Amino acid sequence: MNTVRSKSNLRALTETAILVAIGFALSYFKFTMPQGGSITPASMLFILAIGIRRGPAWGVCGALVYSGLQMLQGFYPPPTETLPYFIAVVLLDYVIAFSVLGFAGFFGKKKNGILYAVPVCLFIRFLCHFISGVLIWSVYAGDTPAWIYSLTYNGSYMGAELLICMAAAVFVLRYNTAMSRDKQIFIRQ
Image (tube, rainbow, N blue to C red):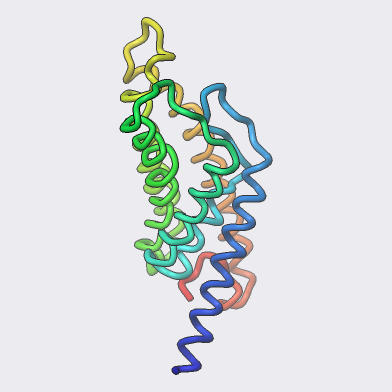
């Protein structure tokens, strides 16, 4: 067995576990919307960092674990009793919505790639919630068209999350420049 490769995998696994744990811990400090969705102190930034540091495969795997933790933390059952809608909520609001954060790995080789990853990944996450809002959660829309309801509801908390994550990413990037390369959080390892 290659000891260099096994040490590298152990380090990647350890970093992934630590970053997921930090992101999950931060997700407990949140403002939660009535039908789900929340604003946190940059909890997703740590999940995005997995992809930036270790690539898309590690990023998606770490984000998938995070999605499961998010479901355990506060699952909002859909306003329907059919199995297909239940599965759609699980996929769109949790599994896919959080797993796309791992796509940050595609920006890991770019200089300051996190500044590209945050808006792209959070926008894709928003699209998942938007589609879910139109297909499933629109029963709360009343007389408002489903797409407007979903756009405003999901856009409100995802927009705030985007701004918080971008501000935190800029702050961390400025701090990172004073550190050695192997200790910088947004540098591909």
